Image (cartoon, rainbow, N blue to C red; front, top):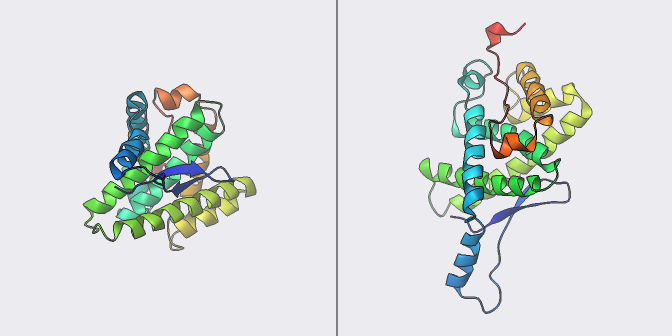
Length: 210
């Protein structure tokens, strides 16, 4: 596993950063210190559930069959990033301990991204480069979606079309779902994230949309 954690940058978004070994510290001592970042058992139960809810929402079949997200590693990554963005955005806006929950969730997301890469057959030597690319993509999309919500629905459609559909599909339906997602989470209390369930809206099949 990559030795790293995630931290807020100046814009309030998560970036990967290494955990350096201090002077005089043995490799074993450093390993125990690093593992301690992820060993808070009460938080692990909470984060595992929260991560599971995000993934379940991101893998709703309607998003792939009706909304046209590609059912590939890249498509599933884009869907997870979209849903995780709104959860992290909401947690960041709430008082403590919500930012700590957001930090632990971001760490967990990237651990699972690494596992998913390895399960697709990416070699050990290639994983760090791929993880760097995923981290950059996560940051880029988070910035784009945050800016889009500040700038209006046309910017949101453009950001979704560019990032999720690679410019190939119309993003109007997905943009409407993203707006509903943002509204649902914007009013959710901390307990919805710490105890569940997170109020993810269900994407309506295209034939059911007005």
